[in-house]
Image 1: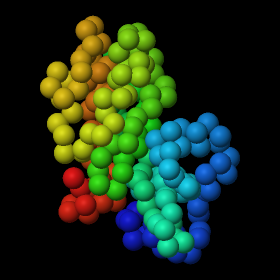
Image 2: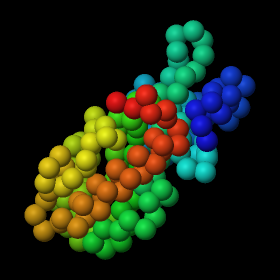
Image 3: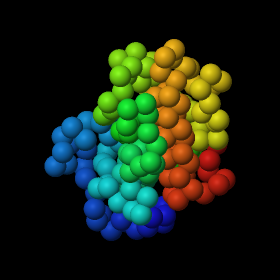
Image 4: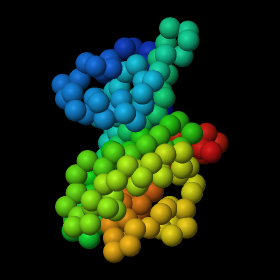
Length: 173
């Protein structure tokens, strides 16, 4: 779904979930963690499944603030050492990551590789144009290189896919 369609939903007031008004409070809290200033979120939508976060534009209208998406829905074949790593990723309308939340994994080394806050924190502020290479712009963790590499690749590929579908090339920084 393109940005124009999202703007249609905004103009018509259809399909918006006000902050704090969603059937799943846990998901709402996760979306709010990725977009603390958002006033509403769309339901999951599109052929490239995503949530749209909205802000007030100062003129009484809502404008897209960014998008959140599950890596496992966009990159279902990407696997860590012991299976998929389910992450919720936030990205603003310029292709810059607002954060990630590791939601579920079965990694034997997760407690010191992908679980610590430092793993997720290193992606905040990264552009989709960055390489996401472990050992270069992504910190590696000893004995957990498969999990960290897989998680980094899933974040990069899913974010780039969302950007191709929802952003214009000149908007991406």
